[in-house]
Length: 84
Image 1 (cartoon, rainbow, N blue to C red):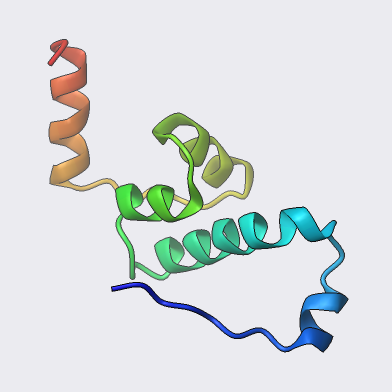
Image 2 (spheres, helix red, strand yellow):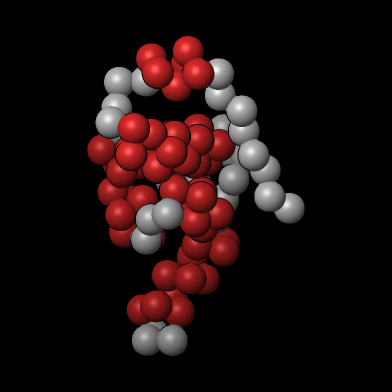
């Protein structure tokens, strides 16, 4: 499934970013909002944002957003620590 959002021209023009950064920044903000509300996992939110684990985690930290750390994240971290 591919979702396409329609943003009115007046709204798009009001966004205070260079045109080439608007789509990327909106995807990052959407990913953060969905993650914060518990609607996306950390992995899927960072995928939507187009970021790696460290980069997305750091961004959450900069914004004082607590990580939702569950069993899946623990298993990933343990596997990483074991070199898997």
